[in-house]
Length: 180
Image 1 (spheres, helix red, strand yellow):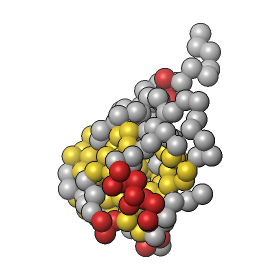
Image 2: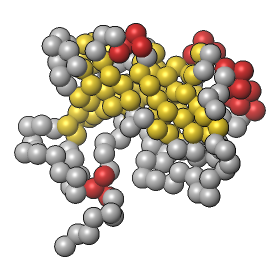
Image 3: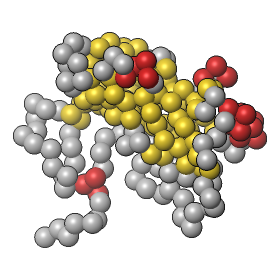
């Protein structure tokens, strides 16, 4: 079940759900708007020949209030908000419709597990032939919450727990492939 603004406000007031900093105007009927932070990562395309899933990717870090995303380009960004989900709540991120209509796609692999805590790393793609200028503090996505049917046997304890700033892929740490 998707949570309503009434339930979201109650969870925030009780401290069960934490989103900081946040203004009441960010709460929508069935979501909370997220704002763009000031930390960005882009793949260091000049120093790597290809992206491999079994090796750490190299990124260029940028700390700035404004960024221009070239056409057909991808970058990682962080939210201004720090989020802490309770054990029985999950969330997913969607880009705002107004931004999607401009050809800018926002997501976070789509899903935030129960028990996650940290700033959210957004995956941003400019599908246009024109650059797009983004400014920190602008509403860029929305977080939609859903209550679990029960508390899971294990909450999120993955490699991105507690992250601050944009964090690059850590898929190279996965152990599902045997290494020789």
